[in-house]
Amino acid sequence: MLSLPILLLTIARFVLGAQEDVIISLTSPAIVYVPFLCDAGDDCDGGWQRTTTETGAMVIITNGSSQDALDIVPQMFIQFRASALHLATSAFSTADVDMTVSQGKTTISQNVTSRTGLITVIGLNSTALTTLSLTYVPPGRLDLGQLWATVDDEIATVSSSYLPPLTTPPTATLPTYTTATNGGPTIVVSQPPRPHQKLDLAYPLGLTLGLSFGLTLLATGAYLVWRRWKQYKRKKWEEEAQENEAWERRKGKMRDDFVQ
Image 1 (cartoon, rainbow, N blue to C red):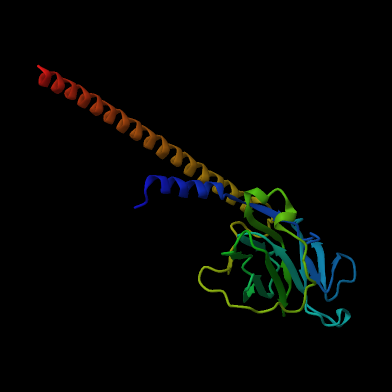
Image 2 (image 1 turned 90 degrees about the vertical axis):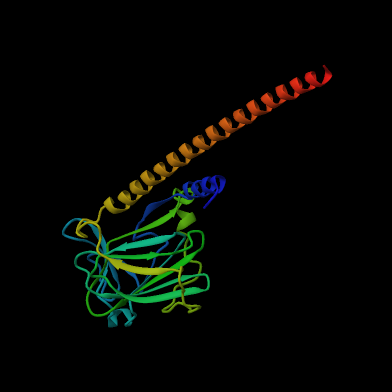
């Protein structure tokens, strides 16, 4: 069982280590698209195209390589600092994706489907630099709908802290190091919390509010435990003071009796 000071320290560390979700624009200069990114209406055969869905949401799409783009397989690269990264795809996305996550000397790769609507990378060291690459796997269409990261509170307001530019040019494949073990990065695919036709902020904001509420409860609990502990210590001190005072009186009486 943890002692009270250790318990309070553990709660304090958790509260101080709060995190929040930040939206990352899919057109951010920190994201590199291979072979290229273009706007709707342009000749984007073989590359990535920025377009708008029927619901009015902006998405980045690709239908795969083409001879016009020298048969280069479409890829997306990003470097970031976060404990988790979340990618939502649209309802029209059908292609598979080869995802590679590299942090330090650990690299994991996994083939996932974009049909589920939500792809999440978890188990990351929030202070270390992570590189993510997405590689289109034919056939089908790949839609990137929304991207957000779970970052530490102290860097959440400075995008360059959690979203630095790529330090090296992207390549077709990332270097392979040690395969991740238990406790390392993990890629998870799941259904989004809301229909992915509505690519809005409801999910990240819900996570943020839930986390804030939980941290508030923890902080309140820590304060109540601390106050209870202080009251206990004060009562203990008063009891000891009363015992000492009674003992001193007894010693004085014994001294007087001895003198008589």
